[in-house]
Image 1: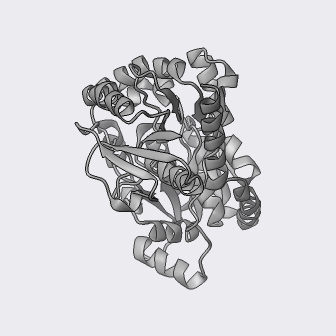
Image 2 (image 1 turned 45 degrees about the vertical axis):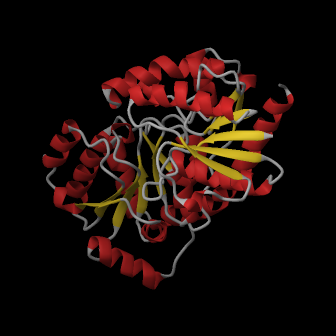
Length: 376
């Protein structure tokens, strides 16, 4: 079988979100099924470390697809042409984008529909593009893979897709996430927060991550408890807009908020392991990988009660209303003051984390590929 994969998010210095999913799933599929040929479609110069085996042929398709107009050119002309020239049997797209003009069987991974429910959270042209094309991608797809039961039902309701067409493949977690010793925890806190305990947020600082309400809740928490706890924000400010900036500037305790930007895997593991609790109060998530990462690193979790997060967190988290600053603050106070609660959440998280691994994800995706191929 000749399988093409959209690998445009395999970026060596910015492996986040779609890129991690692509890397963890595709490296397993490629190496575990050497009898098949794989064609990786990049939109710029690639790193050899992403060419996982001898059965991979990398192809660079121009122009780099980093703007809605260029998305269209890349998928409807470049990808379509490459699929035909290489006589591809099936196209897998881990970021959900397809080539509508190609007759090749295609499988998108549609992670979530945040752009449908909160369109104002993304720039104008991106918003118009995804809301116009993703319903078409969903209908075009031979099968759809998504990452949670919540997202599956959302796709069914929002796009009118038969649920039998959708496979759920929960995200996994990197093998490098593991507990560390107390000495390294102390060194990590010393490095990032001058030795102080901290609430942790991990993700790109996007509006739907509910950054504004997290900031406001932390400010109220600090004022009420008079504690030395800091808020550590790990992630790039890709979507740092004026509203978020104005909110941050208005905080009474903004000096207690620490920004790290992107950090490497080992450092991220240490940061998770050394925190007081993960505070992940996003108001829309297709899955919520930081919850599982926190579980593996034995970090208690404070999470939003919205969308897929209770599905992922189970009993290993306490949940709050993401639209209520008071509720988020109360959750922070509760988890800060109650050591026995923190220990209970850690133990439950250690067990729940075993449910999520990338091999399970890869197996589900591969089963979907075989199903589509055999039904040609």
